[in-house]
Amino acid sequence: MKATIDRFEEDLAVLIVRGEIPTVLHIPEWLLPEDCKEGDILDICISRDVEGTEAAKKRVSDLIEKLKKKSKD
Image (cartoon, rainbow, N blue to C red; front, side, top):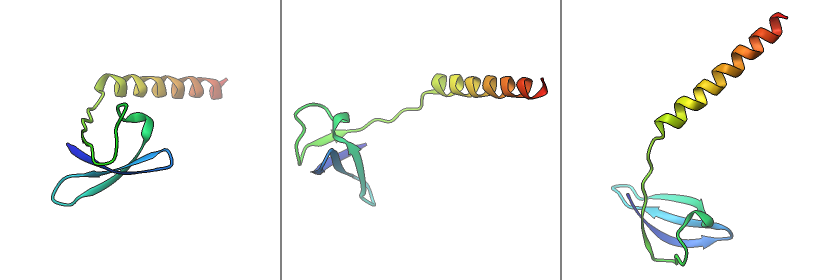
């Protein structure tokens, strides 16, 4: 996905994502590579972290079980 840095507002970068319907994203400036400026084109990749998702589900499930056991005592 390609996006253009339109401008900076305080600590946020305003990006315009290319597509049939342009979309505006506001992201923290610290997420950008160093030395980015208005007009730069960025290549954005978002991927799903399956292992991280499963680990989070397990942590929540374990906490729920722990709470259930505690409430029975």
